[in-house]
Length: 245
Image: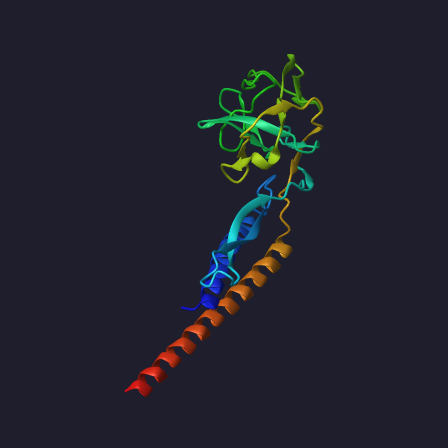
C-alpha cells in the first residue's frame, strides 16, 4: 500500500474515534449535567524517507478528547433534593467505592437511613468531607445558596461541600457525570446553589447529529479513496504480470 493510502487509513481511524465520541454525546443528551466531549486531531510526523532531503509524512492522529465546560440549561423540577450549581467550575463531592469524585449532576435523594445520596447511591459530602444524614422526623428541607441544609424541626443539619479544581484540564471522567480531580481543589464559599432545579446536559442534539453526518460522510469518502487506490495498485500489478508473461 502506498503512502497516500496509509495517510488516508490514519484519518479513517481518527474519524472512527470521533464518531464514537459524538455517539456518546448523543446518548447522554438527557443525562443531567453531562458535558459534551470533543475530539482533537493532531499531525504525527513520520521520519522522511531516503533521501533525507525529502519532506516527512504527516499522518493524522487522535490527539485525545476535551470537555466542553459550558454549563447546561437549568430546569425546574420542584424536588427539594434536586440541586443546580450557579457558580462556574464548582462541583459537588461524593464518596464512591473508588474514592471521592466530583460531579455537577445534582439529582439527589434520601437513602433508607436518611443519607443524601446521588443516583448511584453514593453519599453527598459536606464541607468536612462527611456524608449528610437527616433524621426521620426532618421535614420542610431547605437548602440555601451556600449549601446550608436546614429542616423545620432541627434547624441547621449541615452544609454541602463544593469545590473548585485548581486545574480543570487535569480532570478525568470516571463515568458519564463523575470526575477525578487529579490535583488540588479549593472550597467554594458561594456556590450559588438553586434548590428544586437540575442542570441539563450541555449537548445540543441537532448539532451533534450534524457532526455525526459530517463524520460519516468523511469516513465514507476515505473508504472509497482507499478502495480506489487498492484497485489501482492491483490493476497495475496485473498489467505488469501480464506484460512479463
